[in-house]
Amino acid sequence: MSGAQIYDVELAGNYLSYFLQGEYFHYDIDRRGLKTASFDGGYAQAAWTITGEAHKYVPSSGSYTRIVPDHAFSPKDGYWGAWEVAGRVSY
Image 1 (cartoon, helix red, strand yellow):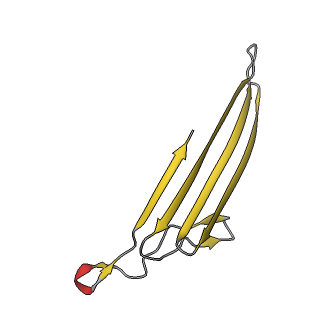
Image 2 (cartoon, rainbow, N blue to C red):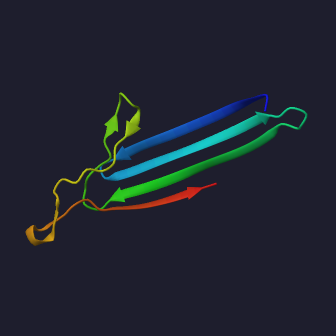
Image 3 (spheres, rainbow, N blue to C red):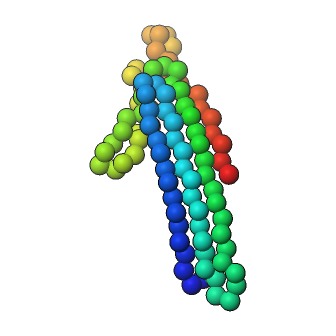
């Protein structure tokens, strides 16, 4: 390999207990004596926190946290922790 170029775009956001995130990337890999290898990839995902918690945004790292339960899992006390339904497609 003699070099590479990577192009990437990512978007994420949440509203209440809904969370969306996606990314697209393109790679060009320069190979000595061979044709440049190019390929694309990406993903899109959506999630809903059934129990109402939200993914919090952390500006210092530019990322979202995992969901943190409002109450510990304790069915005998009527608390079910945090439950999330999510789907993702990648290529």
